[in-house]
Length: 332
Ligand code: AAM
Image 1 (cartoon, rainbow, N blue to C red):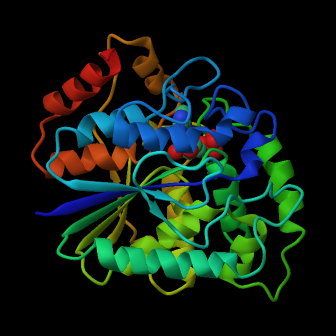
Image 2: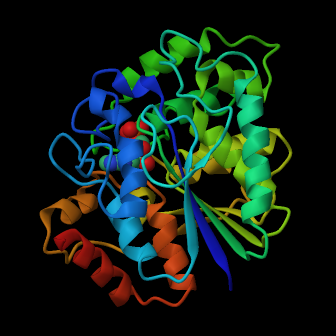
């Protein structure tokens, strides 16, 4: 079984709204997080700032899980800039038309036409990277992504706000509702999938949808590696008629058991047949407080952590080996 993994990072200025995201040590730092996440995946140490992204209470990014496992696997992996606010200082793939998304509370995410270009370019990328690969894994890092994902889904006609997750154990749902309801005022009946993303979306979910659509050309399994945000990717694919049973969601146990969100109810509205694969890794026996807190709903998912753990099992790693590699990396 041959697999390739690709991690897409991008920014939405929505993440700088005070209190909306803890994927960064403060609201302005959320714009650094995806860049540092992807630099860390490739280089082991972020370069743009020499620090691993942390939440305000000091919990490290789930990229720690992703990198520790990738080091043990014999597969190729790439990172993608789809609208990062800070440029990557490691080798990467750039989606040419991608730009950071504006704050959707107050303005459209992009100039008209941007989302379509991001989708088409990402689809080409999917066609290329999936060549000779059985499995394509697509992960994400976009602070504020749960908010823009919910806005995309609501604009496409689904109930997302009440099911969407958060990097925080205390989901700031009222704030999200305020942002999303203001954003949705700009939607009109003539909008299509792409103009909806231009208005209330972000550069990452549309890129993931494009890569998944392109990967259908070659691969038998496409793992959308993420939590409730994958609802936005699947709903985009569904509306564009690309949904296929080879496209699956791969997530963590912390998302699956989250009391503040419901990935199953979120996804079944789009299509009951979409498979959600849940990792069986838990950190209840971890020595490190930062990992133990995942069990209490902090962080939960990101940078393809759940999907990467699931992929590593397909490729032969045992639960023991997976956990050990995460604990080793954490100690480092
Ligand atoms: C990415 N980097 C992260 C992180 N994520 N570092 C720490 N914690 C996380 N959860 P929200 O919408 O609440 O900001 O959650 C989405 C973000 O959380 C995404 O960037 C995702 O990859 C994850």
